Length: 288
Image 1: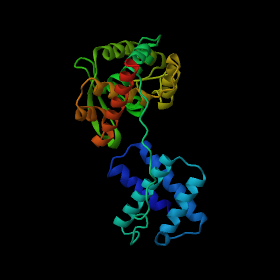
Image 2: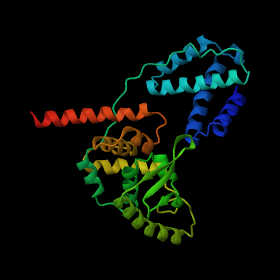
Image 3: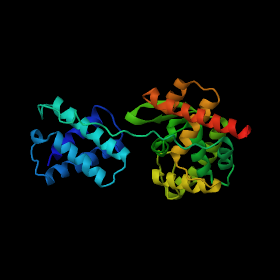
Image 4: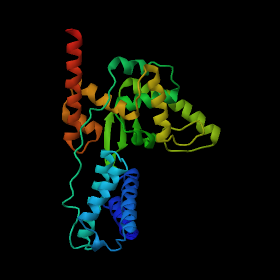
């Protein structure tokens, strides 16, 4: 039910909006589950969908104890779909306009301090692990950006990395000497791996089997690395730390926005709150 219209919408998001594959998959799952709910409630026409159906669906999500952030994302997916349905004259009115997003409490992301970063950078890491961590922290990359990096995206002489972020937007991020040296050392191992497996992959990071490293493999590595400092961390923790440390050391907010690939500076402003919170903690620790 409604699979054709959902598929057409996903194709529009891919071709016209240039959304990433992971984002497209998330939209499809959200809309497919909503379509299943409508089918179970014997709604077999787009024009028959009304505000009541949407409210009942949101109620069901809450009864199923779906996290508020996930509920908000699902509502956003449905709203986008209905806007597209209206624009393409599948429906004459938009029943999602009156549906309100749940209020979300903004949590400050977890960050590591400089000594914790230093401890991880000087841990006993393999060349692959060292290069992964150095690039994560030196460039503030998202895990998907890191996993998808190709060798041609790096210029180790000038010192920058070109990455493709959300919405297929490219950005250049400078990287320092330590990160460049770590990558150079890793490239020697990468060449050895390729020779072992007769491979010719364009991806920068490969696992021991010669396949492009996956996001899951990076998550596991960072999670296990966090155990060295008794903290639960993820690749995003390193990205948050990158942004926070830049701002704490006087970097301009707009520059940090560009480096992170944020389309809206309001997203980047979250890190200014982290910096203020950390400054208070340091102040009171010194003066108590």
